[in-house]
Picture 1 (cartoon, rainbow, N blue to C red):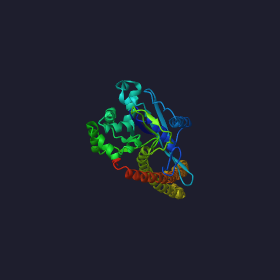
Picture 2 (picture 1 turned 45 degrees about the vertical axis):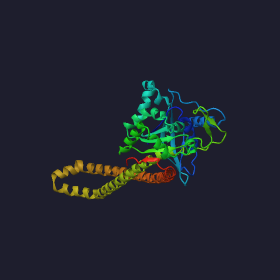
Picture 3 (picture 1 turned 90 degrees about the horizontal axis):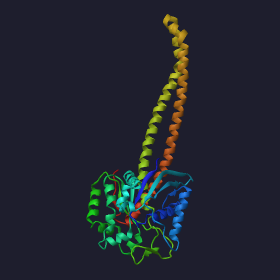
Picture 4 (picture 1 turned 120 degrees about the vertical axis):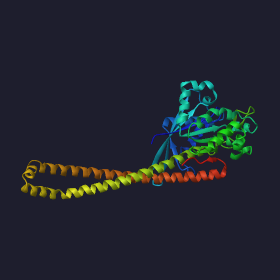
Length: 382
């Protein structure tokens, strides 16, 4: 299956790089409470581990993406079953763009800018990161965050993307006593955000819509400095919170589609199997009657000069040819049936593994929704 494009959008300082590094650290191991793991090419894995090392060091933060820098990370999403088999049904093409694409008017005029907006249009899934510090400012009447997202809203209007708003630095909002519902209520006070939100709810064919609170480093790892922008580390160990949930929601949709696709292929292969088996039985029945055909031609040849000529010049050759082709075709059909049966067996095995994953994801998301009422805004078209 081709890689599924997931594009990560977020203005500068929204925490995209920190989130990405934390996401990989969390999902590089198959954990009991997650149920799957991801793999990256070794060079990419090393790079993200180095970034995470910068994050947990006493001083400094990773450098933000420059406008010309586009980072694509191809996560192979895998699950190891109880019998030790590893299935890797999907690859996620996770594209991380510089935040300036959303805030600099001249960015769209560049080659990178054109590529960026084309990718947004083509992406089946969009993760829009909302900086928790800027969300806090919205409670004070400063809706700069919404202004920075207008171009994103415009792009979403023209597509049916699945959209997940990922509220970063949730530990700060949580410490201030806010919930997902109170954050959404606050954002709805802005006319632009409210109009976008209500219009999205009216689009029955649109994909899912969620507000997902995450903390890439967990409670108490860093707090805002006096300037309100710089984050100061507190010397504690990172304890990521909910970082896997956005990707998990993407995978639930993907795996449900894959299960339906596998079920369709399964039905198709079963029908092919039945048809070809019937065809093979018919051919085998014809083969069994070929001696009767030979005898019939011989009897007719004794009665008719024309049939005698057929028997003498063509009959044996034609019958032998038919016999040979039927035998070859019967073997081919037999091989096709065996191949179809093999595909069916493989699909059923993989289907069971995928269903197991989906069940775990959906259970986890149900618990998440219960803990964060209002996060699952729109179910999405079936």
